Image 1 (tube, rainbow, N blue to C red):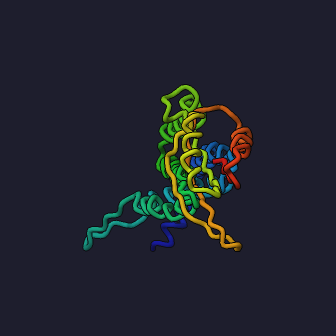
Image 2 (image 1 turned 30 degrees about the vertical axis):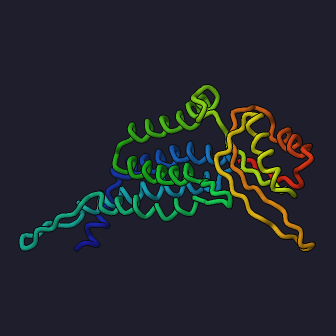
Image 3 (image 1 turned 30 degrees about the horizontal axis):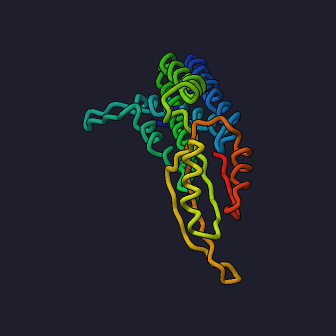
Length: 245
């Protein structure tokens, strides 16, 4: 009985155009997010966004249509949520998004935006599959405006906290008395020490060195290579490592 109903639904050619339009629109909207991630060289980009949005749309269509394919019965009150299957996509996609979030050695968390974009790609598919075309398109345009237009503007002309950039830095000193000199130097060049960790290092010659792990923030437009050269010129610094985020 159920097989016959399914075959009857498949044979209904009137539904094909709408389904194809939904899947195509979900794919096109996901490409906007995917291209933006690809341009920024993020780990999850064009192909992943397209796959997530397209199949989320398909699952939503299947979920909605399947709810109406179940025949009514007089002896049992059968009720189905048209979006029950699609709802599982929202929670299931979290596992994929978690794979994009990385914690680096300097306690910097990266990949949060990419993980959110993955969740957004699934949302696009669900919205389009449920027939909310205008809402899905508006959501994509709004997010792209914030990511590509508003965020860069605030990073240049917004509050100091938004304009500052982080500079993780590791410095090796021979004398611990120079630790205060390093901190004073950063104050002089208007760099704020957000986080600092100091530890002793004993090399193979049994000499004690002092390692400073710093997370600095600055609003200066000075190139990182110039900052590196300035630190390298200080006589009490033996070794420098700078990371560009």
